[in-house]
Image (cartoon, rainbow, N blue to C red; front, side, top):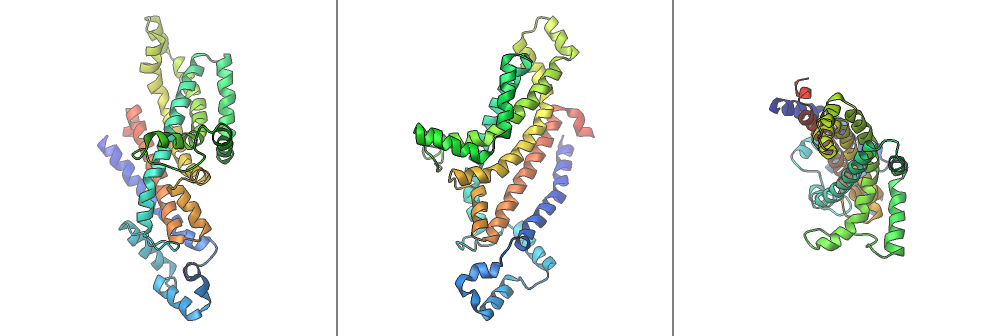
Length: 315
């Protein structure tokens, strides 16, 4: 298992290299000029503009700029925010716990709801419950996150006044208020995941429940709960783990929308604000962090394969 983990970690290096190229390339793909963004109204002075470009190293060849940026990034230096002057690493470091809390709550909601409905549907295929779950899953997968977020805000915050419309409070400061503020973002983030997990889990469980060893277990008088929990669910988790890995990537990208709509100070919202204010260092750091999180999530998915099916470790 240790050799398998080491092999998977080494395979991440080329992927992270490509991620760094994309993050650095944003400086040249996006419209605008970093020097003008920093100078603002003083950008009209040619000497000042040229001097700042030399100080930033923007007149150097691109390969030199990339090498310098990569070396600083590896050392943890993501530069300073053009907008606030703060270190990008410090700003993102303060926002990471918020994004992790929102993402974990959304993933937990998606797994709990998706797996529960998948098991119920797989045990009664073709029933009214199965058909209703299928319709809800299709609706959940097709519903845009921003539309669902606005609908929830209108229903639960404006009409019923059950939940705060926006904002974020740490669970360490006020657990009850934090839970109320987390509810809508977590449900919005986890709805798509729940729908996909439900559909994939239902199909996988139905296939496993038709295997001969399940029939043998039933003929021995084993209870259905034990058959599903001890025998069927683990074997059905391999395709579900694939979906979970992909859904973590979707949660990372969806966090930008949810954090912006609900005014949550996370990494996704930092990326959206950086685009609005042409804050290139902040945008590069946020994109690098979010894409690296998706890569790490895929690594954890591969490790889960190795745990669920030991044959994969030796391929």
